[in-house]
Length: 335
Image 1 (cartoon, one colour):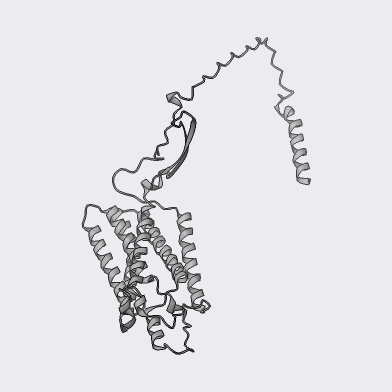
Image 2 (tube, rainbow, N blue to C red; image 1 turned 180 degrees about the vertical axis):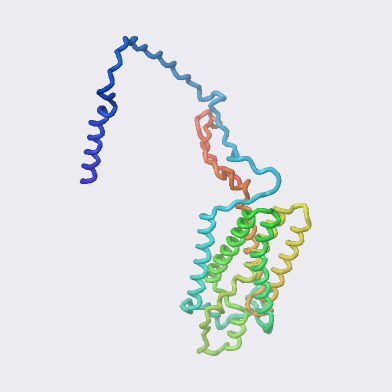
């Protein structure tokens, strides 16, 4: 109430003092009044033109129109530091929290049924239960993942040097970080949701078959589907390949990048299977998920794609076959 009274008083003082401030000083002689001509009456506005509903000029096209012309020449990419930074931060935070929860052991691992038979597994997964894990395969897989992650750090620097633009390097760094963080979060969510036992968990269950006291208490033993190593390696490789084809389409660079990415991703996946950490179906699913994320992220950051109107919603009046007035609600987009 006090604020309202203050505002009202201030407004009243302003209205009272305004004529005084607007009046000429007393020391000046007032200008002689000139006879003024009577004001002319404004001409009446013409009545608005009524356009019939069926007139051609009343028809509006619902076809999508670009908000800005696409860039001429090579493909360019744009990022929004606020939006993309929020996505990266939220994805990484979500994934790290899930990892911390897994480490506490509070999530009960999936228990393998006592009468389970390996013939119930997929045909490509059955041999993983009886295969002896390789002691060096896990290290090789980690090395392959670290090599891929290192490329994700070096490639934006090389892009900035090739393009002679710091902005190009920063944009590539954002896209790599977004691909990796989204893949990290997606993989952890699926692992918690599915809780598929690892091959070694099946082997231990077979060894303790008939033992009523045996119970699997290791949370990590039920996080087989799908492989984080495979998904992360594939995501980085897919992003690198997409950027290579977009930035250097007429050079050997994209094909070399594609071959290296496919070879390294396959190597990491095979080593994870040899280490007894995953089934073949786990690494295949992880690779597919990683490729999908790694391709979608740079595709959605294309300059010619960002500056288009993606979705259009409109109502198109019309008539049915009997002549009754009807309408069509149209939703269209560009993806």
